[in-house]
Length: 101
Image (cartoon, rainbow, N blue to C red; front, side, top):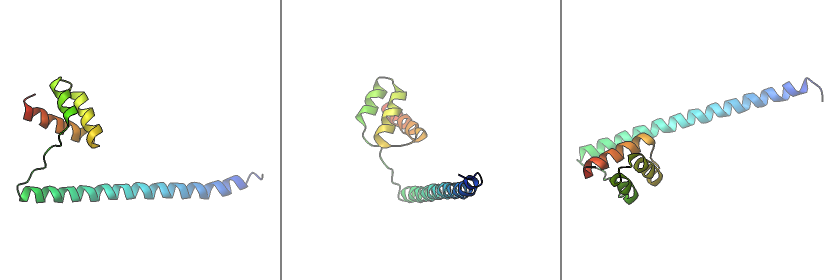
């Protein structure tokens, strides 16, 4: 194969891949921003009507809290709900406070 052929073929392919990766990252950022706006609006509606969203009943989380295993409770909460670490920790803290644990 000619030595000039590799760069001629590889460079456009590299540019194409980098462009697509950049577009995918941009779409992901836009989707995350849109989701944050929707969640904020929903929070405002709930606040306006004085509504609260109850924590899901999660017996494994409660059992871990009762054993004093807060980290395991956060892990169980994340596995059950799919929430991120911060949200799970906040939810477990609220649950522990509600139960006096």
